Image (tube, rainbow, N blue to C red; front, side, top):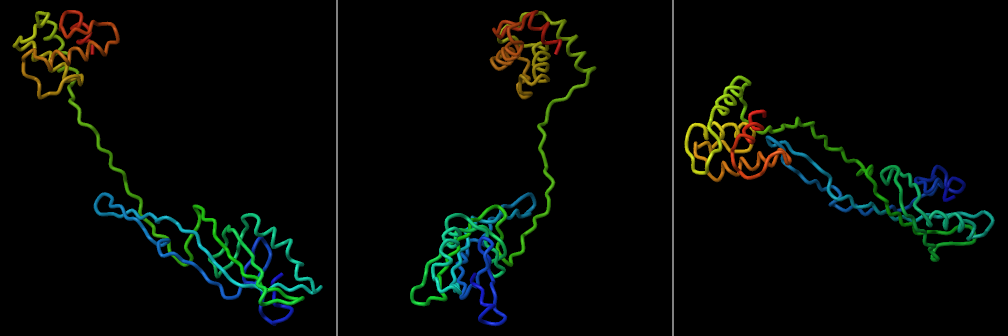
Length: 242
């Protein structure tokens, strides 16, 4: 189908549509410029990560002549109808290799006879993730080692923690709001070590922020302690175990 071998020596098909050979004349391609666009994103020390822009499907059109030795111009209608009723595979080096496409055939009544018929053919690519632009070298971006930022935490040794707990056990409880002494400062240090109080609030005063931190600790025991913000013997008992 569509081959010139039997009429013109040395000229044969240059495109296959759905496995059928055709000779395409005057191939016209629609190559949108923005298919070659890239978006650049700076990474780390000026390294660029490239990403292909939106891929616009390729479109081609050409004319082809089909021959019918039996003198029936409609001899190929069934095959052409089948090819343009579903996505088909197109293979053509001039069009960039192999790709899937929607194809339409239009009979050109100005050029035809009982033994040959000319068709105008339109091919519209169905792009997928593997679609490539013919002749374009892919841009390779080197692997970049990921740098993870770790949150800084206050670290204390086991010995320091044991000494803190012993000192806190010697303090007279309960603490009252507004109370100011070294025992309150020990409590605040313990709350800081456990992450319930910011270290900048280690003032030695049993203030609102310290009361709230004690409440947060009491709440973390999931019902074992009353959430009242009072640092008494039961709250201390659970606190020094941490």
